[in-house]
Amino acid sequence: MFLKIFIVCLIIIFTFSCLVFVIFLKAIEDYYGDVKVLTSQLRSSIFISAVIITAISLLIALIFSRILSKPIKEINTAIRNLSIGNFKSKVFLRNRDEFKELADSFNYMTEQMEVSFEELSRQKEELNSIVSSIQEGILVLDSKGKILLSNESFRKFFQVFLVDGKYYWEVIRGHYLGELIEKVTNKKGSESSELVLHDRTFLCNVVFLNSRKELVITFYDITEIRKLEKIKRDFVANLSHELRTPLTSIKGYAETLEDEIDEDEKLYYLDIIKRNTERLINIVQDLLLLSELEEKGSTLQLEEVNLKNLIEDVLRIFEQKLIDKKLDLKLSVLPSLGGTRYVDNNLPLIKADVFKLEQMFINIIDNAIKYTEKGFISISLKKKDDKVIIEIQDTGIGITESHLSRIFERFYVVDKSHSKKLGGTGLGLSIVKHIVLLHDGKIDVESTYGFGTKFIITLPINLT
Image 1 (tube, rainbow, N blue to C red):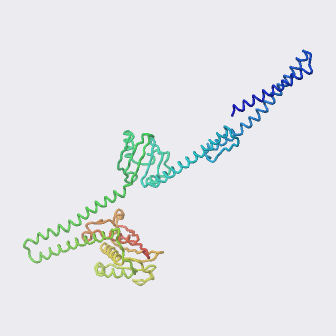
Image 2 (cartoon, helix red, strand yellow):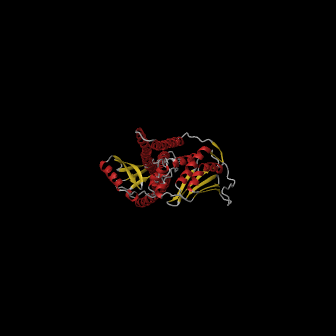
Image 3 (cartoon, one colour):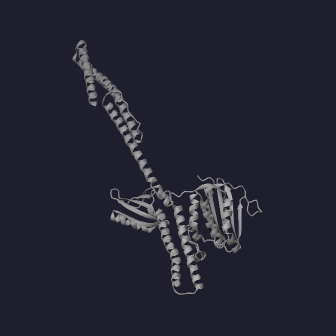
């Protein structure tokens, strides 16, 4: 295009110069005869012609400059808009020349860039969503140990929120992680190790990225797995102990019976064998019941249950024990009307499995009586919103705070010597908890050592 313009300008200037020169010669021929005069007039005419030609050339150049600068300015403005991320910027030119082709190419380029950036943005959002949804903690470090990226799970694990840009040792306490990172960095490979960080157990996997000289650390929280493994180990140990004791007694006394002894001693040994056999039977029965409750397909036989009447029926089982230990029993439906031992304050019927609830109350009340030597046992019922709250409190020996979190574990007993003397299996509270959970309820315990224990059970009124 520039070549075309240059040629047109030359043609115009040349034509105009020729025209002026022809006119000039004609004028000389018509009016001038004298050479001196001719020279003077020629000089003036050439100067005037040069001025006119220069002015016309400047005017033509100005016009062409404006014609040329307008599309350039439009393209320059569009490029500036594109540089700040405005992919909608377009250039539309009417003339069909090189500028038009350049504008069309620019418009096509912006369209392709917009598509590419939208695809990149979508992929980035998907990647961020995937990283954020991963349950494991993810941490990316540069070669100096500075945090480049972290996901939501990592920040929750370590209770931190602003971590990007910090060094990992400012966020995570524990020199074992530093040793693992140093080992992987030197080896330029990958390594896994189980570490305890911030009172939680993690399986840490560290990978070195050769292309970027960065480290990717994955934190798998296995705290609950380790707790379950410990519970299983304790369960096996406790079960072995619970079964070994009565079996040893049965074996020993059975061997004694093989010897010739008098009738009174035989009855004494048979009584011990019978009691230990009953204890074994109770353990097996409780284990079977617990296994049934833990089954995923365990079902409830729902019916309308009057809790007050059910508890009164259960208390009849323990009347003699209460009399023998001289313990007072208080049963009330709150808010209490006062004065009467049994107060019925229109507590609603609840949907529940009556036989399982009966088992639950038997276990809790039996424990309360066993571990209470003096004082009273109180049972209160009250309605709150769409739930019923049952509180069973005793004035027994209580439970220390260190044992409270484990009392619902199978075979876990606070005082083994006391429990053995009372003949407990160590499964009662575990059964209670599973029955409550089957009814979509919850159970809490409050206790002060030496001052008694309170169990708080919350059950829905309308279980579906």
